[in-house]
Amino acid sequence: MLTLALAVRFRNFDYPLVNGETHRDYLVARHITAYQEFPLTGPCCLFNGAFGEVRNSPAYYYLVAAIVAIKDDIMFLGLINIFLQIGVIFMVYSLAKQLFSPIIASITIILFSFNWEILRQSLFMWQPHLMHPLIMLSYLLLVMSYFRKNYLWLLLSIFFFLLAAAVHNPVYGVIPIYTVLIFLILKKQ
Image 1 (spheres, rainbow, N blue to C red):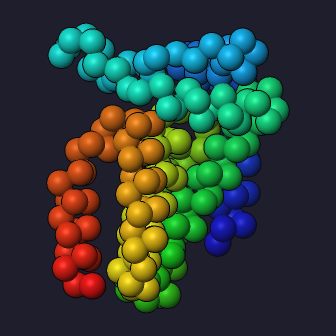
Image 2: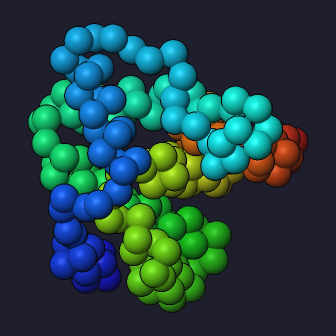
């Protein structure tokens, strides 16, 4: 299934994509790698100016710059994004398998992998697209910490959750649910 999902994403891979934010982010990352000048704020939020000057942290730019430091090419950035999205599919499968069964997990990744919104995330690197693998890894580690009764997995889960929140602010919206799950896991253990 992962092979088919990867093939579909490569077939839809079309660069240079006309997306102003992706090109802006790539140029910011190139500037960071070339001049070692690090921005103090990240991209603006969806409600640009509606609630004052609300901006994301610069962690997104730093992560993109780390990828650009490996190879300075917007096509390479897009390919890395495709592999990150394939990683999300694997994580969704692993979560569903641990929580339910292999059959449910297989049905889940079929529905998840070929959903148009999920396919669209593989088209270009962007904040929500980079946040998605981080938050899914956080959820997977949280479930693993519960079943394996290991606090290291829980600490890693919290780290990746906070990193996902630093990449894209809307993650803060699930903090109450995430916190309740952490307390339930700690109480159970």
